[in-house]
Length: 165
Image (cartoon, rainbow, N blue to C red):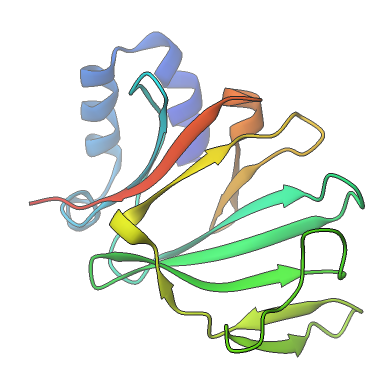
């Protein structure tokens, strides 16, 4: 529900009003700990979710050749954005496990998880060229999915973990 409110509200509200709306929607403890933000190249925040210490989220997308969903999963750990694990249903183009970078385990359905990657993301941010609607890059937080491709298809964005003072 938070994502739906954010997506609908961001068109009607300016950045300051939207920030206040999100702060009012978030429980006080969440508002003080951090946010997962997606910034367009012009600096606009196109998505923002409360991201307290210990919370996890994934970036999910459809593989551009095979079409199946791929997941990279992160956690807010001690003030850092940390890549924890990745799910890959196949060894398709561009995918695979690098020895020494996590531990590959079966997902029980023909694919695999790379567990225990535990790599901090430099600067708590990374750039992403958002794919077309067919690729459908999306943030997955709890049971919610926010389609970045619907918000910024074929554009560069920056995903970042922002910490409160």
